[in-house]
Image (cartoon, rainbow, N blue to C red; front, side):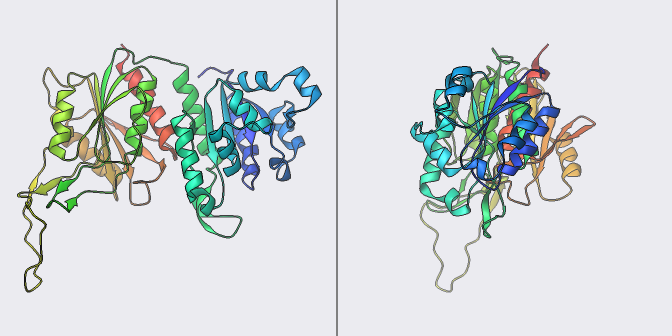
Length: 401
């Protein structure tokens, strides 16, 4: 990463605004300069003097300041940065951005910019889960805004739930990952990469099926990050409630056998990243009609057979084997030991291991361990988007002659 990156930090109104001060300091240590817009509500929680002292720059607050408009102008302010970061991004700020409103300096800067935007939301759990906020979130993501999702925990209002702004270290890691990715554009141009994501489902009868809790978020984020580097990404996805990333060719499947067939149809490929949580077993003979209890309420007997091993199949030596095959290991205990055993058993090149005993499946954050041969690299906790960006960069480096 070069040492002259600059962000425009929008500090919204909320108790979490104090974390923005720590964020400025962390970014400065990484050589990333910060210029700040402090909203009127944000100034209720942190002072302009504190922000100015840490950024070593003027703090911008008023859209109609004659001095600021003469010296800088909101258009220039919104475009001189390499990245705009809103932290905390309040429900109000997200709503304004989603609707294209420009009622103050912060919302005007977001509307006038031609640079990428990263938001770190912070709000009460009910505000975060409200359908209006979730609609705005979906709209902003569709518009290309990146997010460091809020975390779960106790809140200043006394409630508990999702809505706490991510820690400054997590946001700083997302910013650093963005710059690491952006300074090497199109490094995967001409490379085809297969990514699997989400769960598979195996029918028991026309109504019921076997599956797991995978949301597909990590796999979709990886597909998007690889595509941003110029790769021809073939995303093979089980059933998820996610929009397909732009610039990605999506194949929707349900069963493990369908997923394997779609992966093999996408060969030859330069790399395969197997993120999907594939069902290990399937019913041997799915019922043609809904299974019913018998007269005495006895449970039906279910015979299971093993599904094809997609990661092992793609890792087999031969002319169609991708140059780089990466597997994921979702574990609940002895993560490193199980991951090392998996890389030996499957024959893949790397294993990305994570502990899913918490809320990783379905959540927005992840802590992963990357195993490459005898090397074990433990990455710090970060958003799934940041994990995706960092992994995409590692794949680009591995595929570069």
